[in-house]
Each structure stands twice: as C-alpha cells, then as structure tokens.
Length: 98
Image 1: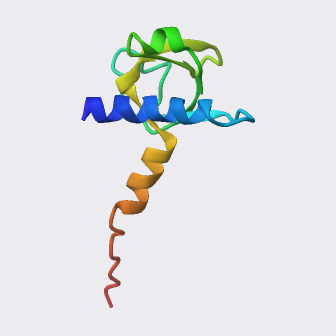
Image 2: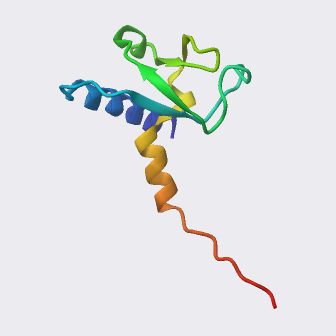
C-alpha cells in the first residue's frame, strides 16, 4: 500500500509538470506520527515541487505553521486519490424508527 501511495504522489507530481499553467497541487495527510502539532489527519496541504527530495521519498508541504517543511512521502495521498476513495465508498443507509 505504501508503494501505491508513493506512486500516486509521484503521478500527481508528474501530471503537474504537464500542465502549462501551474495549478496548486494538494495532498491529504493520512499519517502524522511524530508530527501531531504540524500535520492534521485528513487535512489537505499544499504540495511544493522539490524534485531533489522526492528522490529520497520526502515531500515538501506547507504545514500548520504556515511554513514549508519536508515530511515522509507515505504520510500523504494525492487529493484526487482521496476524493476517488470517498466516492467509491458505499453510503450508509439511514433507517428511521417509528
């Protein structure tokens, strides 16, 4: 699963290179071990391009401090991946009792 997430982050970065007008890229935090004050689970963070650190399985995001820092790549999934997972999940059926 970690490799799939890393591949998804790499694919999101690769897709960003093909866009003429650069749009902000976002990732969703799925782990925050060691960084509970800096990263909130389930929150979207802006991804900054850092090709050198991506070779070391690190991503640069703007965290809760408002500054950009490096974090492990497997702490995030691309926003598009997250949205796809949410739409694929079955909706709970609500029953109303009389």
